[in-house]
Image 1 (tube, one colour):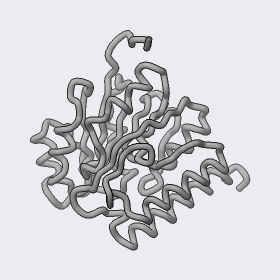
Image 2 (cartoon, rainbow, N blue to C red; image 1 turned 30 degrees about the vertical axis):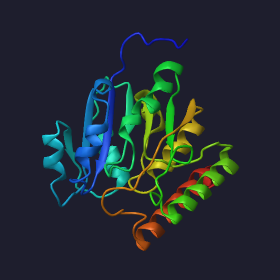
Image 3 (spheres, rainbow, N blue to C red; image 1 turned 180 degrees about the vertical axis):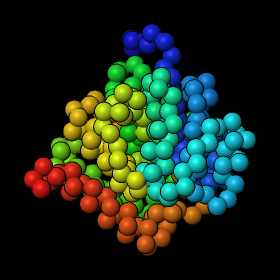
Image 4 (tube, rainbow, N blue to C red; image 1 turned 90 degrees about the vertical axis):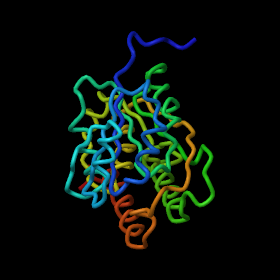
Length: 237
């Protein structure tokens, strides 16, 4: 039998959002509100009505004018209630299944894991949800992490949860495309307790800002690889 927590954990969801006014209502609607204390939407220099929509949905909105996925996540972290127990990250484009949040947080609550990654590779993916370049880029990144850190990751998925205490320990710094892999490397290096769980994935609403363009794909791929080699060889530099 699973050990029951002494009290319900304080869970906060951070949604980095750039021009997600159409998808955001669906993302928020699917999240199980009974489990969540607060939803923070980081309006990352949107040119549409993302901020207004988020406020109307009852979310706390943080404006981050400096563009970058990691920049938005860092802004969300800075705004967290100090009493937060678990932080969940989910994209604002409706590609992740927010109703599966309990899969992500349960290993932390009941089995004392520090970091839980939602793996799209282990779950069901809608046809066309991941571009070939994103699919093979993830494969390469996970292969390199296995070679360098003996990690057993299958994905770099954005849907993830981490204890707030663990998040503070790893001291995240990346401001753009290297955010997800920086976190995955640092939790290994800190010796934290890690688990992957299967999550489903569908075609996003709107056009991808990264894998949907040649420039975005090249920049993201270059940054992910540079981040891997940076953390692998930094002690020898």
